[in-house]
Length: 106
Image 1 (tube, one colour):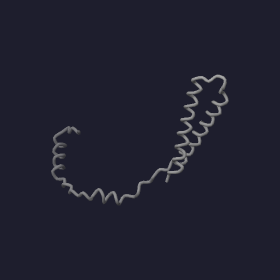
Image 2 (cartoon, rainbow, N blue to C red):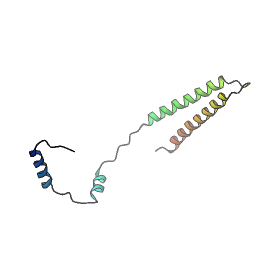
Image 3 (cartoon, helix red, strand yellow):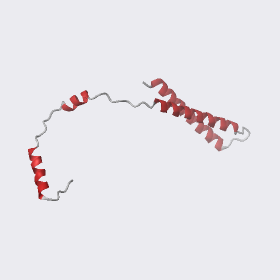
Image 4 (cartoon, one colour):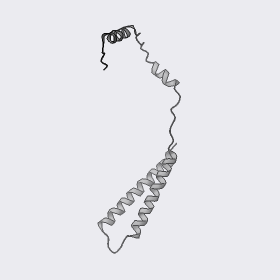
């Protein structure tokens, strides 16, 4: 809220408020204005999404290669099971999102 320093400012504010015409009520105003506005431009980040998917798939493949190259089948540790589950879930989510975007994007 503004604070007025002197009496002239208060008087001017009062006069302006008194002399302003009241805006008429028209429920169609907003709809008319919105219908005349140009269509909103959609930003396309398709290239960025493709780069992110490609990078994600490459990282998943690298993770699988590293995991399988360091896997000792003679001894299975809890770490191996957790790594396998994490890699599997991550790969599944990345592939699901990739296929969903590929099949259902406009």
